[in-house]
Amino acid sequence: MKLPSLEVMLRVNGTGRTVAVEPRTTLADALRDRLGLHGTHLGCEHGVCGSCTVLLDGAPVRSCLLFAIQCRDSEVTTIEGLADGDILHPLQRAFVENFGLQCGFCTPGFIMLAAGALAMEEDMSDEELVEMLSSNLCRCTGYANIVASVKQAAAELRARPGA
Image 1 (cartoon, helix red, strand yellow):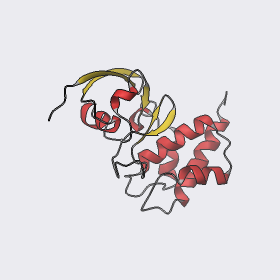
Image 2 (cartoon, rainbow, N blue to C red; image 1 turned 135 degrees about the vertical axis):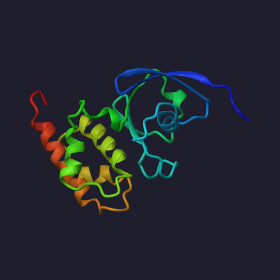
Image 3 (cartoon, one colour; image 1 turned 120 degrees about the horizontal axis):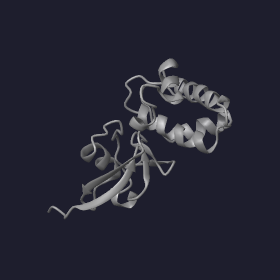
Image 4 (cartoon, rainbow, N blue to C red; image 1 turned 30 degrees about the vertical axis):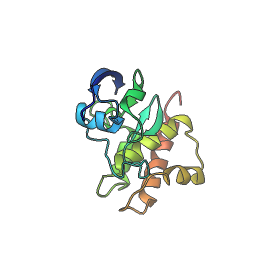
């Protein structure tokens, strides 16, 4: 049974977007299927793996666990919105430089998780960093390069003027 669509206003990557969704449409599905933002990956669809992590009003959330309608009038940032034009965000660049990705499936979720966490606390200890990153799953890298990537980006973000 097809449910009636509802219009939902989201601010996605700095741009106001209106999307028609059924009440049961997840934020992840709205981003991917309605807005064409395929960087948000769906893995487990149970909130366990973290591949679907985006920022909602600056905080990392599992987009597979939220209905799009719950996010109306919110700011959503996806991996596509992190770079500044052709200039990669420090996290994106650090993942490339430190081989923090292999297959790349989990990478957007890790980067968005770290972006939200570092925006709240740039001076995480190594233990806090590892604990934060352990909430996302990767089957390829063994996490060492992911941790190195986030540490490099955190140092760069702390060194920026006004940080």
